[in-house]
Image (cartoon, rainbow, N blue to C red; front, side, top):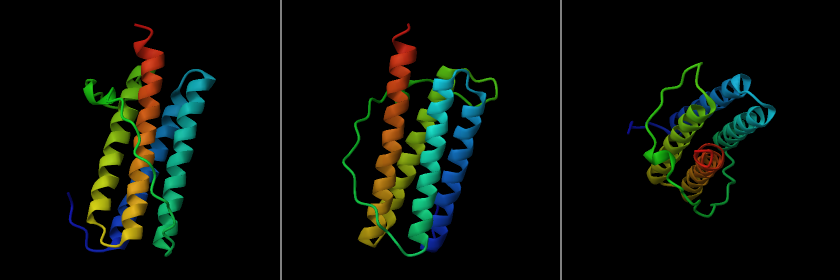
Length: 151
C-alpha cells in the first residue's frame, strides 16, 4: 500500500475514490434498463456521495462516525470471474463489477483504519469499511436473487 505523508493526503485520496465510485454508479444508472435497476445504481451513487461528505467533515475537523457491527459476507463476488467495466455491460456483469469495486473499497478503508493512530479516525475508516461491506452484501444479494436463482 502507498505510504501516506499526512492525514490530509489520506483523506483527499479517499474523497477522490468516493467521487469515482459515485460517477461509476451514476453511469451504471444512466445505462441500466428498467426503473428498478436504475434506482438501485442511483441509490448507490448517493451513498458514495454521502461517504464523500463524511470524509469532508472529517477533513474539517469533525470525526463523528460510530463504529458499526461487522457485515455478513456472502462471498458470491469473491468467486466470480473478474469482469472489466464496459459501456456494453449487461446487468449481471454490472453487478459483478460493483461487487469487486465494493470489495476493494472495503479493503482500502480497512487498511487505512489500520494505519490511523488516533482512535476517532480509525473508527471513521472502520465505519466506512463496514458501509462498503454492506454495499457488497446488497449487490451479492441482488445477484443471488436476480441472476443465480434464474439459472
